[in-house]
Length: 420
Image 1 (cartoon, rainbow, N blue to C red):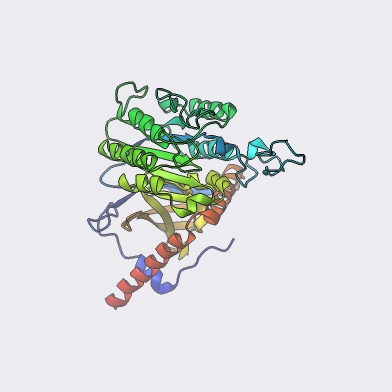
Image 2: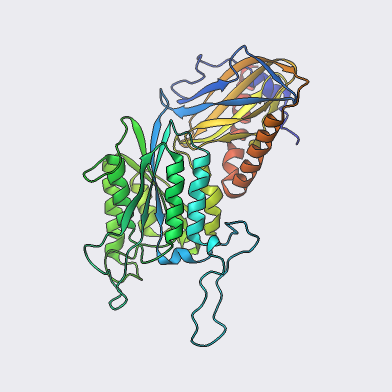
């Protein structure tokens, strides 16, 4: 792969020392801390790529996160997601009945359903998190409907349940996700119930099975393929009362310091439905429409709890930048990847961009030496990171990262020109 090579003028501009030792100022509130390699360390490797890992975050210190994954298990999530989720080589599709009187087939492969995509996305998210920093819980929601009336079966029925309280045990979270999948899709869509149950767990309110952590940032990730149809009116229709109930629940979440990020799955999500999009806005979160529901598997891993959008590494010594797929940024702001190097001393600048446009950087210097032994683990990890980021780039906002890199070049070139 050809790595980006920087113009000489830009290299000189990038070589300007940081304003402070931490690489962050009042104008650049994003902190970047490098765990590997250490400043002044000798790094050995077979390839001209050195491992790089660390943490980028806004504020004076890193933040812990308590995250509730809220999954829609309503009847419509049994339909195809548009992706071969279970990777069995067969794409589940909806099929009309061939004979009069027979029901249509919702999905020829239940393993490719919208529900299956949500569960798989949750598992993919876990793979990129650190248990010590991020606790995860699971809530499911739907709502039983009386077939005779088309309304809620009972005003006292429970339309949302805690599948797994907040925990650092990701194996337990995985088991909870599997239980949700096996139970299957059913009922209507009581989005309000899902938000309120998740809020109860995050805030440690009466009846909660979770214990909140002090100073932990509280996040709800809500996945839904429809508009709220409960608790009011017919279970097959979105009423104004249903919309108001969801928005009111979001106001409660905001009062409890909880941010709500909503992923709308399916064609109706592109229309930015009022309830879901307004609920996210009220709490300061984001509403993300996903036209093909199956894409949530890759998209959810790109969520940022720490509001860190991108991390870029530049080797100032050889004027080369890591390719976009060489560094993976996790939702909690941690990053891991590789930076191009040459034998001898290498000076590296690591820059991070926050969601609000602010940024920060730090610099390290280390000595790289070739080793004769094979480094299969490093090569395998590099291939895995590149493959995962390629998938993300196809779905996420590529222009955002391009704009960031362009802004770094333009800004530092302006500094150089003004200095001359």
